Amino acid sequence: MTTKEKVLAQLKQADRILSGEALAQEIGVSRTAIWKAIKELEKKGYHIQHLANGYRYQPSDILDAKEIQTQIQQPIEVTVVETSASTMKDAQLAVVEGKKSPLLIVADMQEAPHGRFNRPFFAAKQQGIYMSLLLEPSEQLQELPQYTVLMAVAVAEAIDELLAVDSQIKWVNDIFLNQKKVAGILSEAMTDVETNSLKYIIIGMGINFSIPQTAYPEDLKAKATSLFPDGKASATRNQLIINIWNRFFALLNDQKTALESYRKKSFVLGKKITFKRQDQNYIGTAVAITDTGELVVDLDTERMTLSSGEISLSSIQ
Image 1 (spheres, rainbow, N blue to C red):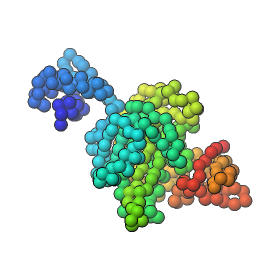
Image 2 (cartoon, helix red, strand yellow; image 1 turned 180 degrees about the vertical axis):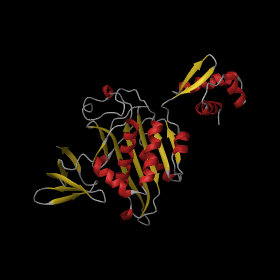
Image 3 (cartoon, rainbow, N blue to C red; image 1 turned 120 degrees about the vertical axis):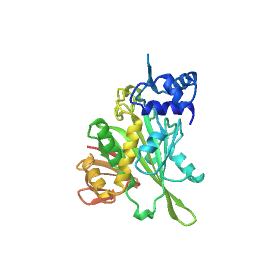
């Protein structure tokens, strides 16, 4: 560990003010080295209170791979990057490089974020959560858990706990708060071409954490929002990330509960929806979500079962 990392660890662990002398003795460096380390940490965005008798760590919304990794109750490797074109692509590259799973890649900024049907979404540096998880499942493709469903529930419930709110899920992969989108989820499978077998699953997401409402492009202001739309977060991204993944791994072993929660949080069920399938437009009422995460729509003359990969809801009334 560098001096900077040691100073940060000491300040985080302390329940009292630490003097420069005490830090220097504990780490085995000069007080000047401590002062320089404090300045370097502050340049990175950490909040450290300077007092007459020493220093005290203040909650700082800085992505911390070690903090995330140690608090997720599952063996996992965590990598934090300053910027990424796409954490989904980073996860794909990790496979090529032979990195082990589960691997979580978190970016402070995503330059080319995209969701289902390759739709772009708005991102902001240090004000969002952009991450992808690389998993190596033991099941075959037809036996896989409904990862997007599990992930949606994990994200929604983690948001509810953090903000004491009641978020909702738009089938199949969007999280809404106050009738505006705050998060989107994307799952992709990677197969072995030679054996035609499933090798990896990548689950990615973008969460609007503390992007001010005024910062959104005009065409998104009425459609999207953040968990903290005033830009002043009362919690950290690390806290939410840890909670999300702890919930996700727990739900992997309790998929029945996840489906029940998914249905309760759906704001699509019982609503009139418009969708397009094979270049034909349909209007019907969403009446059920199956145990495999498909949406059942009543068209009056018949019922149609929709899978997430083939349609997109264009309107909900």
